Image: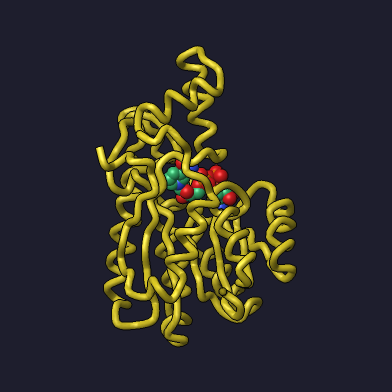
Length: 256
Ligand code: NAD
């Protein structure tokens, strides 16, 4: 399906990003993955589908490194046709207790990084008159939760950025959309499960159940594989007129 296309997925050494990278590679795209942690392990998984896949270690809080990564993607892979802005971090505290340094890091990694990748990748997409940009926002781009001010602000901002860029490219072959997961059981959420287990004095399974019961009516986690299928659809020819949406996959979270 994506033979001849190239894809850059930020934050794809783990969780949702890795799930998306694996599926795009399975469907024939040439992949550049990015992220911290076990890059070798993630790259080995992606290379099972795309033996030429590469990893770039750009720190997504650093605009200079982000620009270099997009340049490297274009030079090494021959372009950046599909861009998935997925890297993200979380910190939970009320505003008065929120460390300013964590605020800055969350805005940089969860919001500004998507501006910097798009700023660098859009000229090439426009020149080829084909591009797909998928911004991994969150239900927290649509509604808030207490304790997550920086994350909620960044994800609302990311949806705004998505809409503006979608409009700027509306008459072209470049589409820009956001996806908005509810709870997905990745390392980012496991930390919140652990905090819940410690606070309530319950085991992991009960902490998971309580987290879901609070927000997600389906009482099931969304999976990276399910989100990857939505990305595949947004990259498909059938989605060529889907522009500027913020598509939630949240077990009913924001229907309440
Ligand atoms: P994760 O912790 O499993 O993965 C995060 C990825 O981002 C990793 O590859 C990590 O190395 C990378 N990353 C973090 N800081 C980085 C930096 N400075 N430079 C480069 N890479 C960096 O988390 P996840 O749950 O898979 O989250 C992926 C995205 O999905 C995030 O944007 C997150 O906000 C969003 N999201 C997650 C959930 C959920 O429930 N897990 C829900 C909604 C949205």
